[in-house]
Image 1: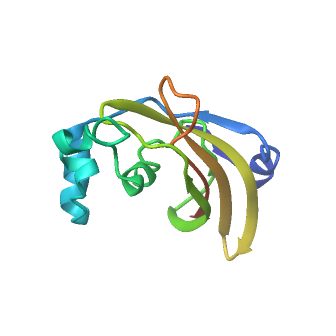
Image 2 (image 1 turned 90 degrees about the vertical axis):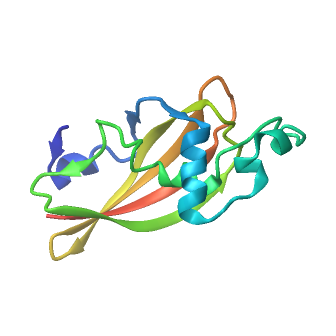
Length: 151
């Protein structure tokens, strides 16, 4: 992973930073998320009942897909020199555009939108993230992800 000065990072605004590796979203992962969040809606955890829906089978929770963003961080992401920690600051927009069917593979495509000096050694990094589903035209999710880096 390359570390950037703030000046170098600002030169990347508007550019795609890269994609993550593909990640399998299987029923075991979906069930584990259902257990942790206590969201056992049948479209996620009951393959037989979900097969009778327009989805044709179980699908991942939208929030599971969103939570996988930290796992789908690309090697080319902007990380500042001297960083002591980074925290999630939030999202400007999150849109769930297509369901993630069980046993699909997903990856994240990242584009740097902004980097702002918040003072006190804090930098707000805004990244557009698109979660792609292998073999599908429509992405599962598009979001503007805000990360605060402390340097």
